[in-house]
Image 1 (cartoon, chains in turn brown, cyan):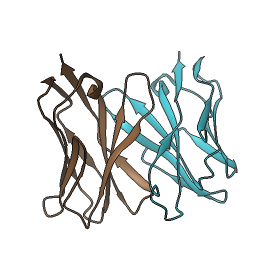
Image 2 (spheres, one colour; image 1 turned 90 degrees about the vertical axis):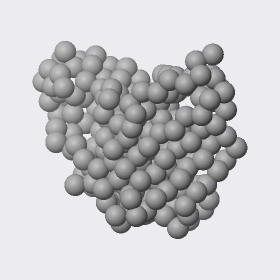
Image 3 (cartoon, one colour; image 1 turned 30 degrees about the horizontal axis):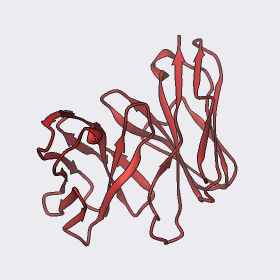
Length: 111
Length: 116
């Protein structure tokens, strides 16, 4: 069945360093790849997404890259700040309606 | 502000009891979802609905049922709760209208269910 693998499960970085989270999906028909951030005790919220006709997308300190051949996409956070500490989820879907989520990465930014 | 509201936010119940979690939204979205969140397992899709007459099973529908009472309301039922259904449950909505936010999931605040 459809599957999304996400690594690492936990990630600690020093404030100001970069963080990279990687996801691999199984369904080659997937064409939409969002990333959600969930702060402690809060609901998940979309931070960035990418569609399969684009290889990279950037929004300030956050960027996502997509390699369709390898069925792999990654989230890059530069100049990390304490408020970036959260759990990050990747997801993949065909169209924009049924999402399969990864298992999440707990990012800790150390001051 | 348009939002997604879940009730109850916390519930403790006993094995074998029937439980209903309710979700209502004022975002005007046509699509609604129920997800379950367990530590280390991410968000797993239980059921999703594209409109009032369209209900679909997700990855982990066994032991759950849903009802889409109106476009704005989508409830999740556990007919006979068991301890391994202890989890955080999220309702979410999205739209299919083709605007810039089409596809984005908007989550409720979550309902924490404990089955003893």
